[in-house]
Image (cartoon, rainbow, N blue to C red; front, top):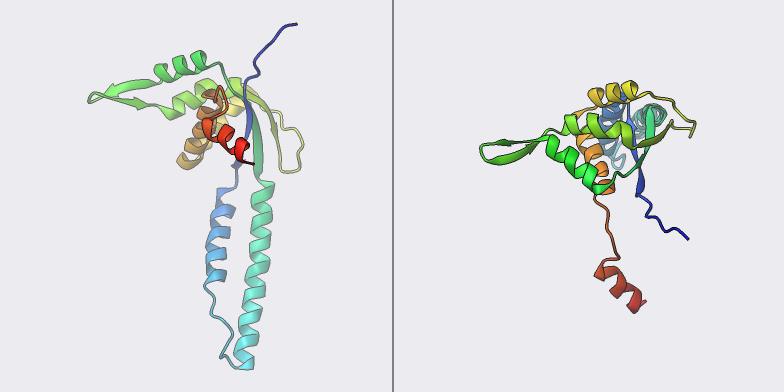
Length: 172
């Protein structure tokens, strides 16, 4: 019987409509800071409730757009040696300190890690290696950083149960 080690698998969500995302965050903040209707006249309270309902309807619409624009990428971790070699290839020394080129690392490694991509409804989305690289180029810096964190986690997996977990199991 052959024994093999399965590389870790994970997923990462990417919102592709950042305008709707930004608008929904701003609108949610606006709704949160609306004045309470306590102490208002009936006319003022009715106007405030109408404004809240209008803003809430708009927020639901924007949140729906954000959900519809979200894709989920299923990733399989690379072998650690391969990952480490790619990280080294994307690292240079600046003033005696190592500096990683995150975008280069994404371009090199992401296409080979992708096992599949689904849209918000769970339907498969077909993307070529060039499509994936174009997606990487279009990511906001924060999105690229979060994706790199996911990749780092998958490519540097734990190899045994941490002591905290075994201790927890003994106490429950």
